[in-house]
Amino acid sequence: MADFDFDLFVIGGGSGGVRAARIASGHGARVALAEADRYGGTCVIRGCVPKKLLVYASRFAEDFADAAGFGWSLEPPRFDWPTLIAAKDKEIARLEGLYQGTLRNAGVTLFSEHATLAGPNGVHLDKSGRTIRAERILIATGGTPFVEPDLHGREHVITSDEAFHLPQLPERIVIVGGGYIAVEFAGIFAGLGSEVTLVYRGDKVLRGFDEDMRDALTEAYLARGIRILTHHTIPRVEALDGTRRVHLDNGAHLDADVVMYATGRVPNVKGLGLSALGIECGWNGHVVVDEEFRSSVPSVYAVGDVTDKPQLTPVAIRDGHAFADRVFGGMTRDIDYEMVPTAVFSTPEIGTVGLPEHLAVERAHAIDVYISRFRPMRATLAGREQRTVMKLIVDRESQRVLGCHVFGPDAAEMVQMAAIAMRMGAKKADFDRTMPLHPSAAEELVTMRSKRPDKGA
Image 1 (tube, rainbow, N blue to C red):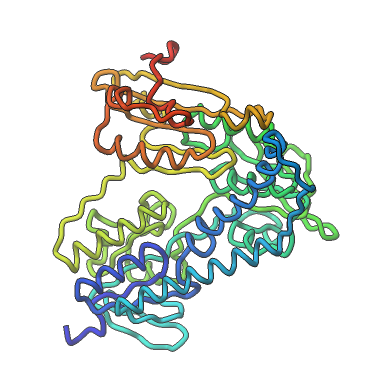
Image 2 (spheres, rainbow, N blue to C red):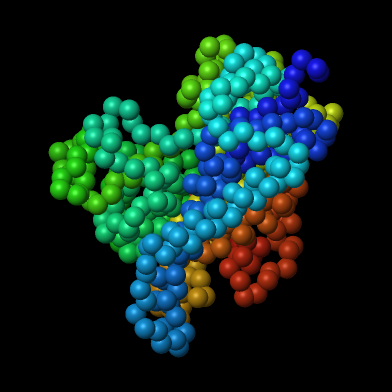
């Protein structure tokens, strides 16, 4: 032990790295952590948290409009983008301070600079020039936005990282991509008053999600005035007198104030020195790890989005905690990635846990599908033709609920609760025996009795 400066050196101050450092220190390990940017990582600084704040802001437009149907008289509301961004920045700075404080209070030594691997037990700090020796090294550098490297004019586009710091709200924005980041930002900018066009190379947005959820979201976005162009790629983006011209593969073009690429994220491994150390990386550059989070170099581990695990903050946190418990606490920690709830914070939003129908059909001998479409109570007086969609997928033989999918207001809150029951192996009869909470949208989850006849086998 005397040959090492620390028992554990963590590279990356995001959700997974922070949790691993704090828990390892709590087990008595000597821990250091290096962060080249801001503490909190993607989720806190440029992901889940600021995005959800912007989602809240964007939904007030519909709240103001709906209020009239309930007897409220309001002056025409006005929105100020700089005020929102300043408030968001203040909250993010507060959270970043909490992350640093938590680490310091746990006894973790912090280095606010870029770190690279300098051998199986060495970490080089670029700014100070120091090389530190650690018995174990944990890579937790997360992900980074991906933009096609052969895109002509890629210097004229932004990613979700820059979207949080735009000096003003764009009047027109083109968002490229069809995943949850693209869909969420389309809803944000549309709600705040921008003219939004979504361009996606696939046939339908939200690939991998349940088909009924994808269809419901597409229909709702079109009704909100969001333009969705599918089956298109973009070979070139050019700058024209303060605007951006997006050239489509069919020869047409779109003009906008901002072009945002949301075509996924890739592991943030550039410049870490992985190849020099012989660390095995996977198809998209991710660090290949075993069930103990160990890489091909036994003293180097990795957790979070830099691996090939589900790219979700709670997964990174759980992995970081499990790593520290196993290595420094002598504990056995199993992680089940099968029933991971997730949400798309569109407007309306999607909450989902378990299998979408197309995967349930592959894995189960036969399934029963229960689905309900209805107009939520609030929409009646508001005069809004909004629809909520709820869907349960049940294994016909065991009657276990394999998937729960909700599209509508507060979908994420409902699905988090459903995930507990499903994680415990709940069957359809368990849902049926649960007393409905009335009046609520969520009661539909325990009152659906009719199977969808065309999807019974």
